[in-house]
Length: 88
Image (tube, rainbow, N blue to C red; front, side, top):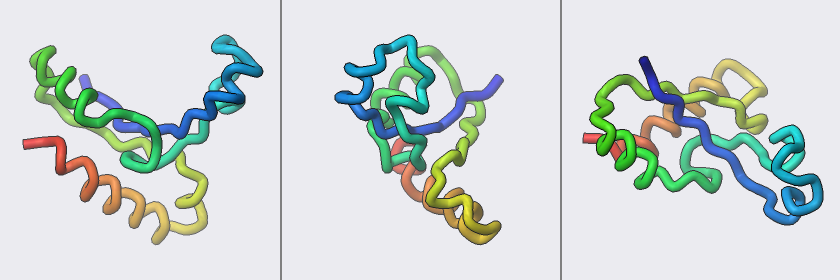
């Protein structure tokens, strides 16, 4: 069992246009943790309330970090630096 740390920037106006049943990429943009709209304090608080203490895997789908292996490695370092603020 594991949890995924994946952030998105939600385009609320576009969501209003296409509706909730549209393909998600029509109304949100994948981002690194901390660069989108996810409330990470609430996310980790909810995991703790549920008794979860397993691994949290970062999903890098932010196109800004797809250019090279070095970019992808930096995205993981940046995600770690951000998310460690929410974990013991």
